[in-house]
Length: 587
Length: 52
Image (cartoon, rainbow over all chains, first blue to last red; front, side, top):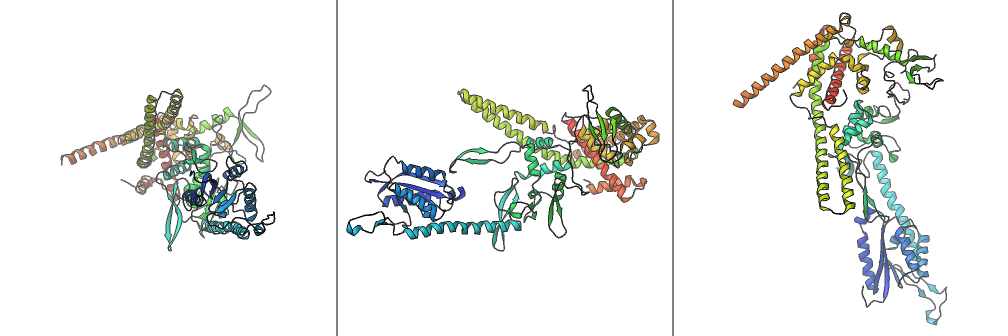
């Protein structure tokens, strides 16, 4: 503050967006210019207000504070300095006059750095008299025009900017913040820079895995979420700003994936290369860049909830609750553990899945039963009878031993393919666990150094939270991964499963496995009548083998013998490989 | 290493005696692969001392 100056001024700076606050004519630049004007006017800058806010809005946090201050200043304020009229308002002449009148009322002269606003003059000054009407602002008309221009300028700027952005979005270019899993990039086409999204190497694998797991149909949403979180997924972090949007006051995000969020992500067609948003009229537009995976995987992961139907013409339609037979999918809770066979046996009349419930009688006791009455006469079967009959059907199945050789080839092939996937997943989980342990070590160090009980409590809580996260991640880690010797273990286990195939099909505790196996056993799911009559359409791999059905133990023996032969072959192969490697080393 | 296509050819030779049509053969191979896939998952889970 300069003691020689007797006058005081205040400064108001504004930018439209936080981005503009850092680039373009920033708040700092405006402040510097306004301070220069204050110096020319030989006044001290008493206070300064700066904000990133829309100028067309009269209700602005910092402007409100400033106008209040003008009414009750702690010292006399002579000038209000702004860079330009459009910094004060873009609301047109009306808004400008309100602010100007307010300033004049309290004796504050408005000054802009371009010198457009001129001080008032008394038209009767030569007579030595002054009236209300004789006070005249020579720049009044120019100011009004400038204020109106500022308003129109906004319309012009936004029309040009947003209009172009809308057209580009309709063409399939990407405007705005990148979707999670992508990053923004510009490519040059015909000498023009165009915005696209490219996969973010850090985050894209999470999204690919999310869709892959959903599409596999092997896991429910909770299991998918657990697996993704175990890989170390955290939502993106965003800054939280203060009211005037000039200071970061915190962060949001950075939390593990939740089921709700997974379900939101799964619906976004951008991940398979289609844009569908307000600016495309919610119609799918093929993006000018590749998605993270194919449309097929997207459709499979969505299971009809959102279905992208690509036409031969290159266009696509988005269908909701789509099913291949054109019927609207009704979603019911299929997973009532009390009725585990509900989804495997159809109603003999309508050929739909049986319904099931436990109506209570007079005694208030429930009577669980499988039933159906959808447009036909009611059919109801006691739970025990129903499940008993289905169990008998399953027990009558036999794996065709002639298929064993073929199954072995499929098993070796599957082992090799899946081994790589598991290794990749394990790598991610291990990285995550290491990073959690590192964080814990940091907290532990901080804990040792602090004496404040409040901080200790905070650190302890954080440590415990990380411990829980670590345990969850470790649960998802395939134990010890898969090593070169595991193929033998896997074969032994597969042999065990083949010998106890029946138990696997009847183990109601492990419904996800039954859900995958039982549809393989039948060519088409049996109706309850098929079960009763012993005429279900069984896949011929599992067809009833008359001789072996009579002596199922013989079947087991056959499977075991055949498998043992394969294991002997495997051992021989391992010895041969070892000898080969030794010979290589010797050489 | 054998590719999936090679393995499928090997399976086709193994199942030659069944006299399956092209469609039936495709379905059978698909079923066998799905079965192997389930076995792999069950084995993996048993390895992690989880279900089954």
